[in-house]
Structures are given as structure tokens and as C-alpha cells.
Image (tube, rainbow, N blue to C red):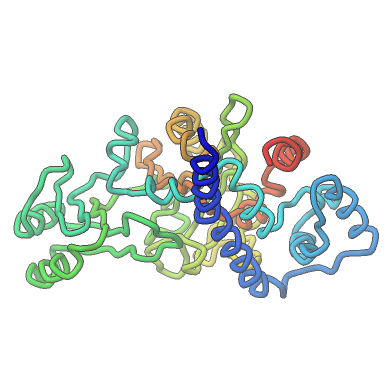
Length: 368
């Protein structure tokens, strides 16, 4: 290889890193700074001893002093103060920890709900009715159809949920449509208006009674965060997300709440919203402590079976499941990158648990 060709390849690789990593890091760092003021009212000021302990723990890896406000936030909820230093601040997690395990650019390309029936063909998922893909409308078998045929399929399904298929988060772009009471002409106009977007239209599912009774108007999902590390699929954290007040979605950004859940389905004592407000009882009546739901262990089994399929794109991901009336998991979504860590740490403590030392060493001493 001559010198000019070597320089060109080096410039190409540097530009690629700038595009796929550096710009994303800067964006995420700014985002973390914007998010924290919303959580600040729940912070509990750190003692000088706590600051010294946290700084000493992180010193071999990076200067953590500018992130102390996040430790003050978790200080308000951490019962075992000896574990406080193991919490991962948002800015650190999204700029230093997501990248060693995830290719954000490739994740954005792969993260398409219209392709789930190909990626995860062997697990239960909500039944797709039609797919809208950049000017093309397909049926569930990926065959081209007309708008009139799409309307007929949705009318046959009667009740459907329309979801953004790409680059969606926080429950935005989700709408439920009852075709038995919606004008066919209005829905056809909606199809015409949105045919250049990426939308997945599915049949509305039913959920297990043990979960439905908490808040029946939303599908309350179990989120499982997993990591493929050292040849093994690790289940880092499991929570259940619940709607409230009649909402049709369970996302925290839409007013929902979440609590930790054990592998055998027992809920933690407290639930939280995305800002840290704490409840021991759901506004609709359920007391969290002593409540058990079904299917969490089966969700873990599915994650262990599927996680390897995404390894060329990401090894750190979050999975969302509903539980059907028979107690079996229904895969709703997988978040391949930029999956929130605050809600997990609020509910279940430090995200990497007793793996924290190994993870920090790998990220800062080996991988980087």
C-alpha cells in the first residue's frame, strides 16, 4: 500500500469515527446535562466522606468529579450507601459505556419494527396487519398491497395499534384505532397521508390478568436489560412499566411508572416515575410489595435465546415484553442503543451490580 492510499484510508476511518462516535457522544453528553435538572429536586447532598469514597473508587478509570450531581440523585434512593459509588451517571453511561458494546449507526439502521418478523420469527409477537415503508404498503407476509386492501385488512382486525417503526422512543408515535367506530374514509385518508413514513400496524393484544389488574387501559410491559459479555448473556435488570390515570401507554415519558421485579415475578416495594417520585401503591390501587406477576422468568429465557442474534450490532440492549393471558411472553420491542439506565438504577440499584469492577476495567483499561 502506498503512502497516499494509507493516508486516504486513515482519513476515511477518522471521518467514520467522527460520524458514528464523536458526534453521538457530544449529543448524548448535552442530553444528559438537559435531563438532570428535572431530577435535581430529589437529590440528597453528598457528605465529604461520600465524595472522597466515590472519587477514590473512580480514580483509576476517569475523573468523576463533574458527575457528582448524579451520585447525589441516587443518594436519595440508595439504601446500601456502600454501593453508591457503583452507580453509573447518565453522561458516563451514554458516552463511555454504550459505545464499547454498540455501533449506534448500525443500530439505527437495524432498529426497524417492520423487520421484526424476520429477525425474531420464532418467538410470539403482536400480529402485524400491514407495514408502511417509505411509500410502499405491505401485508404481514411482506407482499405489496394497495391502500384499499390495507384498509380492508385493518377493518378485518377491528382494533389496531399504529407504531413508528424506526427511531422511535418514549411511546411517541403510538396510536390505537378502533375500526368499528372510525370512519373508513378517515382511516384511508390517514393511510394516504402517512404512506411515506415507516409505520407498523398490529392487532391489539390481550395481557395476563396479574398485570392487567394494575392498570387495565395500558399494556404494561416488562423491560429486561441484557449484556453479552465474556461469552455469556447477563440479565442486568428487570422492571415492569405501568401506565396510570387511564393512559394507553406505559412509558415513563408519558406519565407512567416502573418498579423492579424479580425473576419469579415479585414486585419491589416502591415504584418511581422518570424523575424519581416514589409510590408504594399504584394510583389505581395496587400495593406493590407482596404483588406477584407471571412470566418474568420466561422473558429471561427468551432474552438468553435471542441476544446473540444482535451481537454484530450490539451486545447491550433492552427488551420489552407483554405477557399474554396464558402467561407466555410476547416480544414488543428491542432497544439496540441509547436505552435508559436511570429507571433501572432507581428500581434495582447499580446497573452492573457485582460486575461493576470488571466492567469498568474492561471499558477503560482494555477496550478503550
